[in-house]
Length: 139
Image 1 (tube, helix red, strand yellow):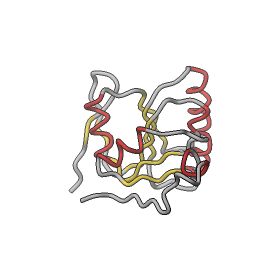
Image 2 (cartoon, one colour; image 1 turned 60 degrees about the vertical axis):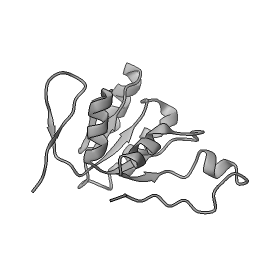
Image 3 (spheres, helix red, strand yellow; image 1 turned 135 degrees about the vertical axis):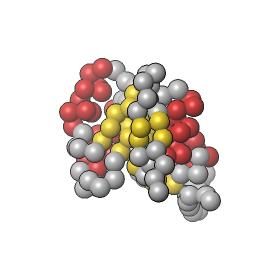
């Protein structure tokens, strides 16, 4: 039996079926949403919820590039963001070299598995890089 959750950036209620992928962050070129959207063309059965805001022209470009099954949710208040994380099957991130991202930590703290593009601090600084990083969903 599916449990439906409600989240939206406005006061109107939208019901969303759990079991989607989520990506959270500012919608800007360095966040790598362009390559994430390209990959999503090969994953038509798993909806992707994009949470965050950006400059209007960047958001328009991303929406135009997005395949079907990608939903732009805008910014969410903290309580709705927590619900969005809890309803996700997986959190995905594809930045072009983030130093440190809070969104993957928020996803893991919510018990959501994280899939991240290789880049950012683990790939650049091998001296500080952990030998092995394993992220998994907690029960």
